[in-house]
Length: 592
Image (cartoon, rainbow, N blue to C red; front, top):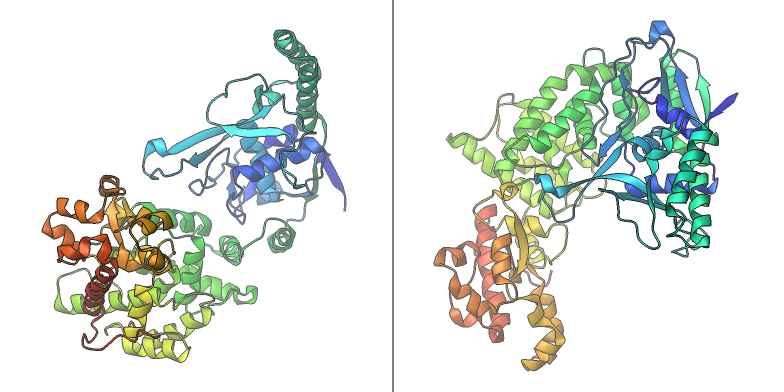
């Protein structure tokens, strides 16, 4: 096996010109930290593993989908675009090395866009488009952290040219590609050193020269891209090489593998383009925002085509892949109808804590083409209520936690037996859930666990959101709030109130759902740490009813906190009994 080597500059200048990505490749997934680490590694002279390229003959050029490398990355929002290979007789596909080559492209010629913390995705001001810079005055011998993998060189992403200071001179890394010859680079370096001679100490001048020389050598002189060029034109062989190569590189998830095989085998549908565009549509084009991914779509491909649910390569036969392709339009339609329906329940990106819980409902929609459950018809309202109750119970009882393949297989069999034209078979489904040892209904025991839900847990927003009659959480900016403010439960404040002996029990109660509510950002800012008994008097009666606040003003005082919790938990219980259609006269088993 013969390997060849080229410089980073040579490879980057050929990306999207001679080098492309085959359709079987997954998306770019590296964050800025890994990009910085890659540049740091080549500055240190570390090997960055080998690359695998595939050269297509002219006759095979148009048989396989080609895609461009991403130059400007927007994390989780950027997809590779199809490439036009006209005029390129023998393009080279990168089979192993996409993450590294894309990182070099982004660092040298492109940008990396990230979301600013606490800003909403739809806000144009929430995004920062950044380029890679190198601090030429940073001494690589001085480690800022003790661990061996921390970067030694001063690479960092900025949205604008950072200001130089006494100990920092920021050089935009991509500028190093401007020099076609070493003479041009030396002339540039000499001019810069002359320009800075009066502002740098002797040691800084040496650091400046050392770092700049090393950057030039690492990018433009050292042949660090060590690759093997595969010339065999058999696609199945290349697919096998791709799978094996990725076993040792960036982990190839099972959904990546399935999508790669689908992309290579489907005849009428471009699987990769279809899947990613459909995910974007579900997440950003409906009335609510959602948070689905290709893994969710791949799982539905298996379930709705009545194929084995578990990801196993041997299941991806040509017959099964053809069944998935033939089923694609019906699958998309069923998923879309289901997502729109559950969004109308108030379930979206904020509180869907187990996406696989939707798959049995999607299968039900799949068996019933045209069904939406969003009309005012008596049958639709009844059926929608049944599905909503089941979904909420399944989410709160964590029915689909852990490995859910066997559960999906069992529930698919129940739905298939029920057939089309019938109501959602909740009783038979719950029987299968119960047989698996998981809780099938929302009962008194589940209510007790619900009341113990605490601030900060993954399912807390879901638990809180179902207490409200409205459900437009995807359209609102709401926050979890402590009804009695957190600072009231500090030990010093409890001691001042003469309740230091109750500090521990109060702290527990303060973070449970009886003391939690959802407020808009504006309401939360207005409330802050104001005493609850004073702030609540500024709200109208509808506010108290909506948030299940007890009517008795005496309970709003901190001295009666425990009684407030008891009364509000009682109101919450009544809300849950109403929501889940339970008998309201059963006593809670508080010892569970």
